[in-house]
Figure 1 (cartoon, rainbow, N blue to C red):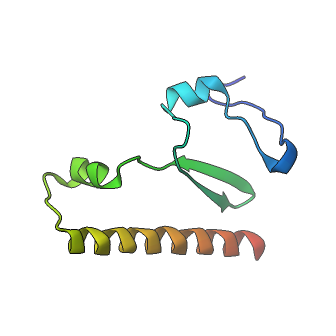
Figure 2: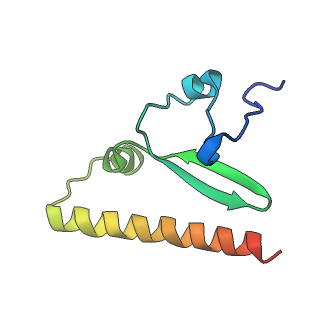
Length: 95
């Protein structure tokens, strides 16, 4: 098989096990959040950063958030993710 390409079986309650090679390569941890979305006829799982503000700081540079600004930024990011999930799901089912 191609590196990073594995076949898994859907178990009871529609669970899947992410193969160890992929878990190791992506440094996935137990309890870590994944974004799941539909793209065309595929299911895409994307690891979410454990600490989104540290990831944002890494991308944008040194930022200091007060509680209010942090809450607004968090709400904004969640809205964006929800909208992307909705539009991705709607476009997949409309085909």
